[in-house]
Amino acid sequence: MSITIDKSKCIGCGKCRTVCPGSLIKKDENGKAFIKYPKDCWGCTSCVKECPVHAVRFYLGADIGGMGSLVHTESMGDILRWVIEKSDGEISKIDINRKESNKY
Image (cartoon, rainbow, N blue to C red):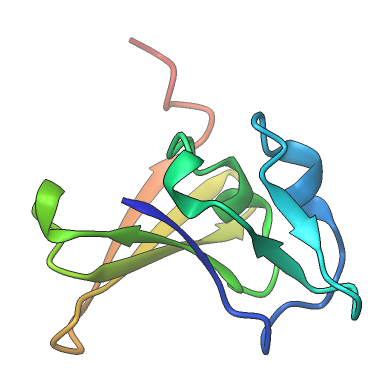
């Protein structure tokens, strides 16, 4: 599992860089985000949750049952929607209420 960054979608806002606890995300000469060593990623998904344009996605490899799925989030007030794009084109969505997520 690792993070993948689509430079064609990146708007250079830097939010992903700010929240990365490992300081793994850098900016290239055009101000676009990239991760130099994806294998060093801890998989915390902080950057995925911060990217406003879905340029940063979490790659779910076969080693954890993801079979190449990509995950991004969409924020709608108190709801954080996790969008899973499977390799066969199927899309699944999971809505999490932020106010209720740490309840238990």
